[in-house]
Image (cartoon, one colour):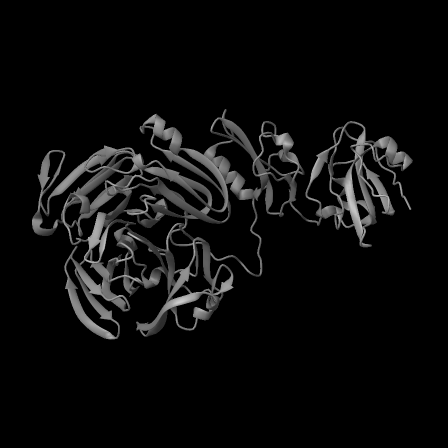
Length: 629
């Protein structure tokens, strides 16, 4: 039986759904642009298995009126001789055949139907579509890469479009970004109609997403410290977000233009992305350079960086968003077995704003002098200088610089570590961590030892006159009195958990001391009051073994899920329980593979996270968060 339905006069160049043997017209995710004089059709028929299936596409208006099918017509749907047509229907508006033959159409309310192609050389070649959520609208982007013009299109959250426009601008000669809110409006980047001006609204759901906190943000300053002279691999950045975000990477206008062209970029990414910078972006000692990079995003994101992708000397750090940066810092570093130029203690400062006045009060082990700008400084000496936006300044010394005090009149970013740290059990490897400002320190820490290392060195650094209680395992080993800017290094075995509690805030840094199968690395340790109930991180590739170490209140461990999977389904290589401030905590170290991981508790109980990994002659480590929530 063939049914021809009456339709209104046709429009020019209709867009019609175009699929074969679909379960329902509205589930077709492909479109075709009809020729002049054609309309949309829907045809239902029995498949070879006796199921009712649907064909959609374009057909000439004359054939619709006659109800006849000409299988030689390339614009018509093909029908096998053993199939029986049940319904044949024509309509004459864009996407009208999504509810053809009496089927249920698109849901209401809904977002627009958008072209959805991640990469095409011409937007007219995109034949895929997606029905957006009501909180989304369509976008189209045009970019140049390697001299080629590439277009991408799809759905994006409404406020992301506005944020993208605010940060990156609407268009320029090489790039175009547009949002719109009507069906199939993102067909052309040069003339997108119906730009959305509808204010975003908050949609309440019964299972709200975890509130982003801590080191998540929308702007980050990234820099890379000097690595061992043998390192020459690219500098790496990983970035994660809960949904889809635009990212804009910009370097100083004073940077060498050849380098700037390589660094500056715009990128749309979903869930996570990684990208590299040339190794020449690493800082050099005692010279003002233009090597800070700003990363801005439209959504809340987390960023980690690696000072080299070199297989023998690498380390990573969590990057602090700029709204958490401040004006006072203390440097953390240690001495290795060898002391000298290639094992130097070092720190680097990235400048956010013009006319930043910087003051560095040195604390140098053994009071060995350091020379900067032709002037010698001993421990207690003060170096002052003014810097401008996105400038960097690195200080490097053969002796330990821990306790060096950095003060500025405007917020800055500070990174520290060792050019190449060795131990009696390993070769040397680069260590780095961004440092939290003093106003982000905590007064209570639970520090697991790094698994599969010869030992862990814990450094407690106090900005104030403090009384610090240190417990290793079940034994209180010491009550320390640390004076202002004084520190204490504590060595523990590979299977002990240490608790540090202070009457005033301190910073705690952990150093993995390496082994015969991996080299040292470091990370700032998260304080108990800095724990979060949700994290999203990237485990880098090319490492032999990788670990997620969680410090979680007892009773909530079984509520922990990793990538929406109960934690009990993962391999646990180490477990311990401790009591701090009258509260019991479980420490668990979990073996994982490379990839993207989300960790969250179903009861929203905060927990600490430390991430690290090993390969021969190398290791890396970083925390899930080490600033206030």
